[in-house]
Figure 1 (cartoon, rainbow, N blue to C red):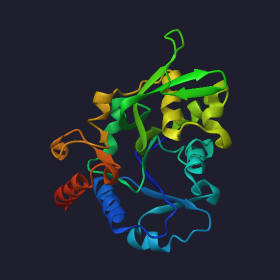
Figure 2 (spheres, helix red, strand yellow; figure 1 turned 135 degrees about the vertical axis):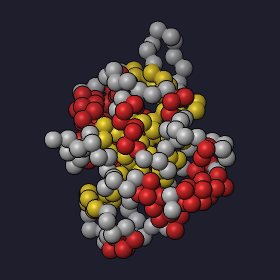
Figure 3 (spheres, helix red, strand yellow; figure 1 turned 90 degrees about the vertical axis):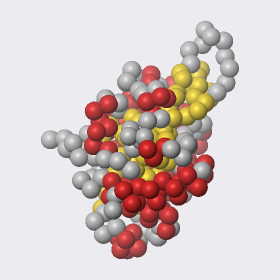
Figure 4 (cartoon, helix red, strand yellow; figure 1 turned 60 degrees about the vertical axis):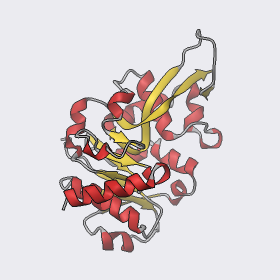
Length: 254
């Protein structure tokens, strides 16, 4: 039986989280008290410090190779092995340590999307030609391209059954070398997953919808939006806004 509970999954290679990372994750978990939390860490890494701060969290270990580089991490996120751990759930929420959630995510599956991540503005344009996928390259209109308006993976809702389906089917594509083989990978995992969901006909949210769910940049009034569920990467884009949001929602959730 598939559980409707949505686990929150946090990959990390760090034995000790920083103060701001702890604040983000604390807020995420307080906003979603019914969601189990899972750290995904390298094999052999001590989890003592993580569990001392988050004693109710679970630990899943993966080969340490997956935590050695961005490309290696992309390989983990594009492996069926990763998603098979969560086959008893319909969805997971992937929340990296630079993300935080401010509302109950239980309602998000009702939107009917298999994959939800913050928007990309401008969009990414992916064009498969032969064995490659070209990103943001101009070609004649007769060559089919795919516009991806969003899907940032750092804070993303993922349907497990769909992830396993598109990764299995995607491995048979000629252009899959652009994302399935690390030594020649040209696109990141979130672009790859958004692309696969798109070409295999899954319903995907447009930018206007995404900007009401997960965002990376926005105005200081963002926290008043009833439909905004979480934020990712604000430390890079607007650290002042991030502190405002954390303070606001820490008070709301106390």
